[in-house]
Amino acid sequence: MNKKHLILFFIILLGMFLFISRPVYAFGLDLSNFGINFNAADKEPQAMVDTMKVFILMTVLTLVPAFLILTTCFTRVAIVLSFLRTAIGSQQTPPNQVMMGLALFITLFVMQPVYSQVMDKAVTPFLNEQLTQEEAFSIGSEPIKHFMLKQTREKDLALFIRAAKLENVEDPMDLSLTVIIPAFTISELRMSFSIGFMLFLPFLVLDIVVSSILMSMGMFMLPPAMIALPFKLLLFVLVDGWYLVVESLLRSFK
Image (cartoon, rainbow, N blue to C red; front, side, top):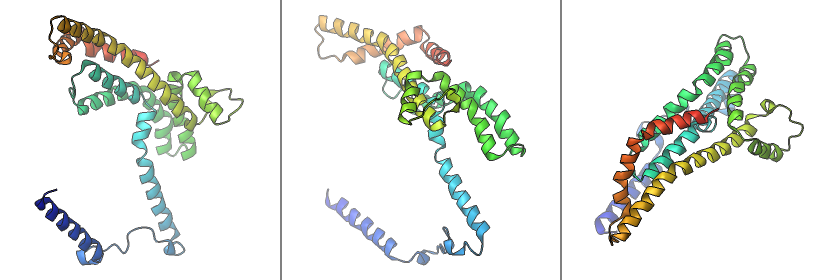
């Protein structure tokens, strides 16, 4: 660390110390009413309940990305596309934004029938006050459970049933989401890795062929990956690779 960096570090440290040591009101911020006032619960119980509902809602919203990833086909699609880019060896092409955007819209396409059932059977009746919150959650989770169970291996599901010490489970639809979701997730990981292995094989063969040719020609200093990349791209374009990969992904969902 040179002298300029050291002086800049001490200036930032001094500014942070002054900011923390000064009262908050010195900066024109009034935080006296911020947060939960438990002392006012007896005077305004409804306000306390509403505040707690807001905090619970914000907590639930933070779980939405995990719910999207672990209860849909997003995991399989994203991993397969990532394996494909690695197999080709094109580094950051296509960019992560493009890959994740494509995975997201494929997920929406596959899950659209499922979410349509959830909307028709649970969300719309709940908004029309025809169902209670518990009934809407129970009815709305059935299409999602049905989708996940169709993609889940019996071996993976039995693992979590034994771990939860559940006995005499006649209908898997009676299982809770806390049992179905992890079983579905490891089944998706297994399937995505299997597809990724199949994607790697043709590109691996091409890498071996290019490496053998370069070694036979005595070009030991020339990186085989750099020479093989144009041939990989040409092969992928000639066989219409994106169409085949996406078609295989769509067909892989039962």
